[in-house]
Length: 169
Image (cartoon, rainbow, N blue to C red; front, side, top):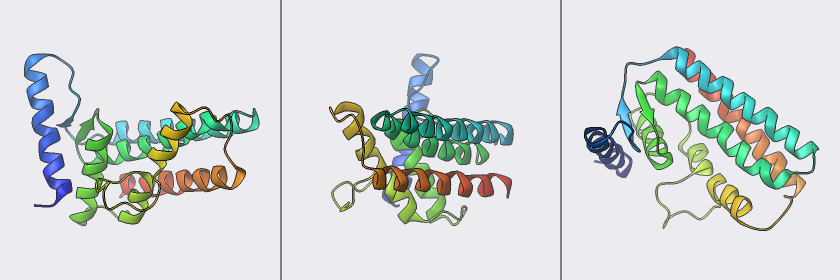
């Protein structure tokens, strides 16, 4: 079993245990596939992308690293909802998407997912969007370079576009 599939299994069990103890979980739960919820996640992703542009124009590009990340993340949550999953954990979401890629259920390049986040931290050579978000969210820099901003913004548009296609297939 792949690392992603092991992680998805762990996430499902984690959520199940939490739900037995309390009403909220911090893992992955199997639900009825929900296209309306998937479409709502896409709307939220697009909302975050607009906020990203707004922050950049207002000279708050450091904060835009968080909104651009969440534009991508909500796109992945849309895919999860389409396939009948609710996630309340980023690593669980990334593992689920990787598992769907491995199973050939979605047309989403693993390299694109690896740009957002990677499950194989030791093998990762490139900085992920998660890394960039954390650097600017927890660091003291007040702006990012224009070329990095453009790269992140274009990546988010690509992720949203691919998620839209996946949920409507």
